[in-house]
Image (cartoon, rainbow, N blue to C red; front, side):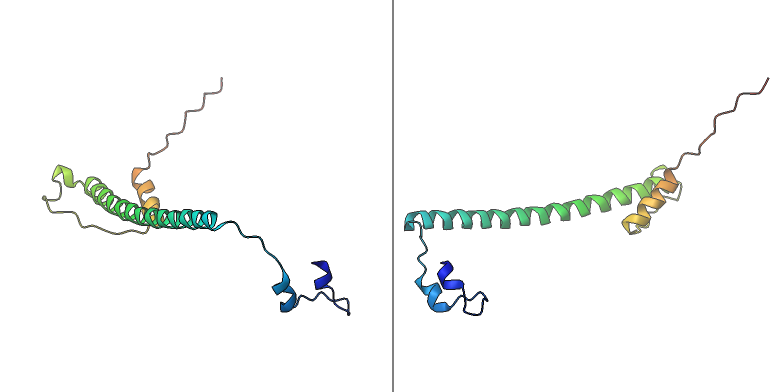
Length: 119
């Protein structure tokens, strides 16, 4: 093979005529067919898993929306009828803002420990 790739100028050359002379061993047709079957099975599996993942993401989005609505209902006092029993106004908050606002709503005031008196 090396005799086909050296040029007279010292630059590497590989001509199409030389490539045509190469003998590339191929596995028997039965093995080739097995490889194709396995590749197709893997492709179908990937497609199926992608569909499942998409469905799970959609279900997760739905569950998050329900949880968000329930949180709003609880945090606004709807479950105790404090707002006249009106349905809560659902607000869609971006996740970062939602987490920040939720942290603020759920924050427990910190009570510092009393320092011991000096004697």
